Image (cartoon, rainbow, N blue to C red; front, side, top):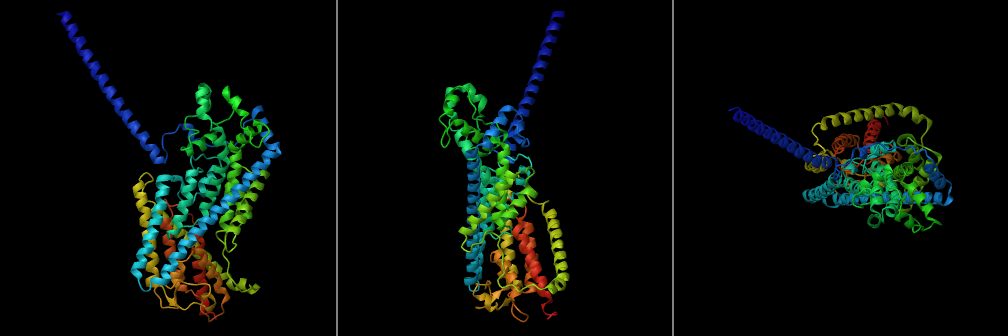
Length: 558
């Protein structure tokens, strides 16, 4: 009986242990499935293709290592005149590329806007609905495509990109921010977004584009030379290859990983075994392979990347505003934390080359994308400063209130905007904002626009947009909304060349309505996934407010 009781107790204990083990195993399996699902979702939410190790998101250490090997490499790279000339030649190439990209973006967006204005001039008065549908369809296609590129292809290309570039130059590691994928998406997205009539501008993204061009150009040869023989070396020296290269470092399809690995200094051409024999094969311009290794290591180092990214950001701003000195000052005062004489000269050279190339390619010879002038402006007298001071104060107050209203609208819309993980909703938001922007432009021009005869001196400059007016007349609000913002601001500057009693081409009511509508369009466009900045929209909003305030005292103060 005692044996039977003991056997029964052992059987019950075994069954209890088995059940407990099964429950624990089931719990662990469920936890593993949840963890796997979470890890599968997390990279998608971050825009990555797979989970990364923790050190992948560490900050960038711009401080050079203090040891004999690093000191000898820096000395050889700094003191060799041939290496210095190559790096300045690379700076020149970055400036040329930035100028060409700025010219391409400006030409494409100006061409699209000019075609839309020609459509409104020629056909809207006779076939308004058809013209509106063609205009809206083209804008919707361009805006949705720009959002698709930024959401699905390169999430870091959205927005202006100035703040992430400044964060990178201050040591924050943002994987993929300056990769070739992000660069291509930024260029295409900006061109399509500005052409879709959204209240955005290409000037802010040009800083991001210039920095990305600098990073891509400087890392091209290190990637090509240091990673070209990875597969062959793995077969020859498997142990050395495993210690030297990560599996995805030299994969050209993983552009973000390559850049991050180079920034962390994990890729190096120093080799053992079979790699020592191949070093002598990589000579090119150089008398020995050691110089090439020194150059490639220097280009792939974080400190050199910082200098070239600073130069690229300066070139982007210079190409946007036609101000090389302004680009250098922006890089010095706002973007860069680490600065040296070498960085200053590279920034100046890169910015000057970018502006010069853009001026050569532009038919009007403008050295920047934003180059606004008014022809035959009246000379300013000392009394003007005293007479106009109250109006300047009024315009400043209106601009401050506009900024406060913009922030208020942003706080309200941020609560209803879709999350970054909901890609379909974000793409739908882009399409919805494009439709709302186009509808607001047409409704304001149709119901509040005033038909008027343009000044005789402006007719030869193809001034104005006819829209729904009779032949020989222009719609004042359509003239503001359906031409390039820079051209509208130039016409507003030109109002000063007329004397009292002549037509100005604009009305205070039309400019005030245009300012209110454009403020709403800016608030809607800011925060969506489409790449674009706020420099030009802010200038345009201020020009409308200032122009309207300047026309108000025209009648009571003859």
